[in-house]
Image 1 (cartoon, rainbow, N blue to C red):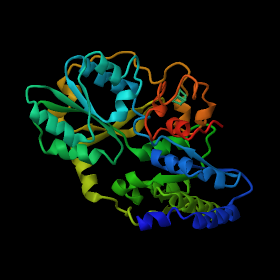
Image 2 (cartoon, helix red, strand yellow; image 1 turned 135 degrees about the vertical axis):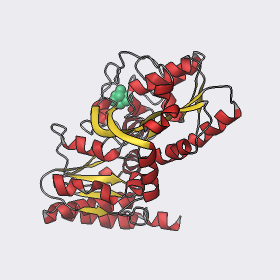
Image 3 (cartoon, rainbow, N blue to C red; image 1 turned 180 degrees about the vertical axis):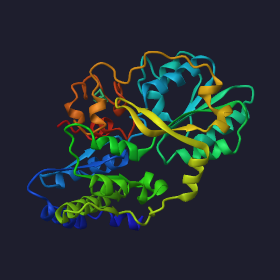
Image 4 (spheres, rainbow, N blue to C red; image 1 turned 90 degrees about the horizontal axis):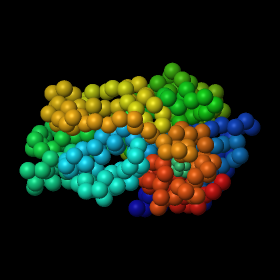
Length: 360
Ligand code: SF4
């Protein structure tokens, strides 16, 4: 706790902000983070107000619920309405899918249960062996290892997995090609990096000449990361640096990486509102086909759509617009009545801005 408080020290934050001011170029630079927790820290602590006018920080696709394609939720809804028990995280059930949500499917008689992790789903399936369970496995590299562990443990046959895990580095690569975005540097996500390691971002400075800093989640972590990015820009040399060395190693968590590798295959994957990103999704390997809900059940969905009319989540999640630029923000779309995925989770940019009453 003492260590955490040091990273919230207002006097030190002011010093780092002054340092940032001294490093800021006369032209505008735009740093992109890809983590809902970073957006929370930045917004909650008012860090944008500490930055010079020429230094912008935008939010990329770092909220796992926000990037969940409607088609995958449609599949979960189909299963729930067919009598299969769908177990998943609380945020997921409120996300609007093509026509309805898992919450509405539950209200219509589907058995949808909220769990804190895959272990809860395993316990439920053991307790009710005559009922079919599907764990709707979402999240980035941080949650994929725990899904992998349970698959390797060979759960009872009444449990299968609807896998919607996604990978962060390919989404960062996509951002570099978004027309008009012109990112000047990446603040890479601390949580994901504990698993994949700093090395996973090597291509950004090497191939794309993009300054990249792995950062933690306290206000000073983010400010330090911004100052490190500005220093790289000032030096005219893109580097890969680690601001979060007490948690993130160069190689990451090798054991967790091996678990992911053993259980999953990397394939192209759809991201909500962004289309298909090459090599950005995980599916179960053939030897685990018996646990693959997509193979076990004849799931029929058609005409999925990621965005409800008027929703601009596809622009919010790549940082092209701020939530307040969406005409629905805090009018018809509120935390109580979300019209898009970005308003559902505490990691969603619209939800974070709404909670902090930021309207411009
Ligand atoms: S305010 Fe609502 S509708 Fe608009 S982009 Fe955000 S989540 Fe989508």
